[in-house]
Image 1 (cartoon, rainbow, N blue to C red):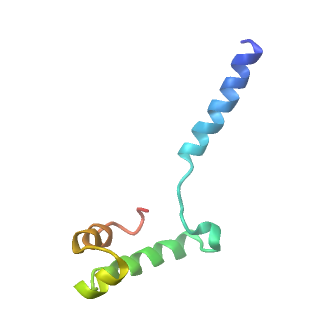
Image 2: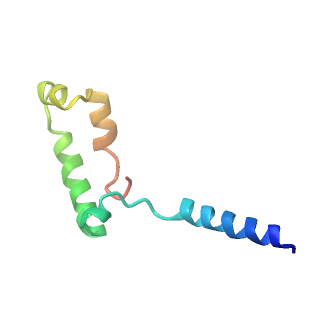
Length: 76
């Protein structure tokens, strides 16, 4: 391999690793994985209990609330 190929492999491998890294939103703000999962479970469960007026206050439709509320807690 020549030097250019080595550089490309290094750059592309870094991009591939960045794409494969798990997206754990909230961990950077001091929340661990388990705390994040519990937070998702509770907030999605609570989202399903909101009435139409409360959903309008947060800017969601019933369909959006159901879509988010029925997702498993391990999915972002």
